[in-house]
Length: 164
Image 1 (cartoon, helix red, strand yellow):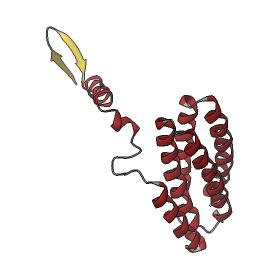
Image 2 (cartoon, rainbow, N blue to C red; image 1 turned 180 degrees about the horizontal axis):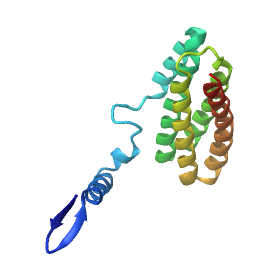
Image 3 (cartoon, one colour; image 1 turned 135 degrees about the horizontal axis):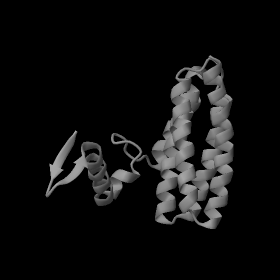
Image 4 (tube, one colour; image 1 turned 60 degrees about the vertical axis):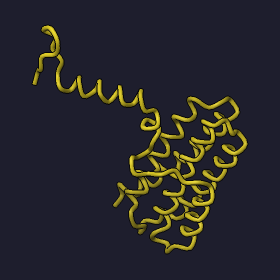
C-alpha cells in the first residue's frame, strides 16, 4: 500500500515502519543493547546462584540450565566491556569457558530442551562475536578464544538436535 506524504512524495508502509524503528533505536540506545524486552540484566551473584542450581539439577535439565548461565554471563561480559572493566571482563570470559565445558558435558542425547539450549548458544555466539568487534586488543584475543570454544560446543549440540 502506498500513502501520500507531503507533496507527491510516495513512501511505502514498509519504508515508513523501517524509518520509525531506526528512529527509535537511535533515540533509545538501551533498546538496541537489550537482548530481549522482558530480560533484566543479571549480576555476578545471581549468575553464580543459577550455576549452582544447574549443577544440582537433574542430568536431563543441566544442558539448558547451563546454557542459560552462559547467556547471562555473556550479557554480563558485554556490560563489563562497555564499562571498560577489562579485568572483570577477563574473569567473566574465563567463567564462560568453564560453563561452556559444563554445557558440553551435560549435553547428552537425552537432554530436555536441547533445541532451546542450542538457540541460546547461537545467540551467545552472536553476542560474543559482536563484542569482539568493539573490544580492545587484549580483550579481543580472549573473546576470540572463548568464541572458538563456544562455537565447538554449539556445533556439537546442533549435531545432537539434528540427529533426533
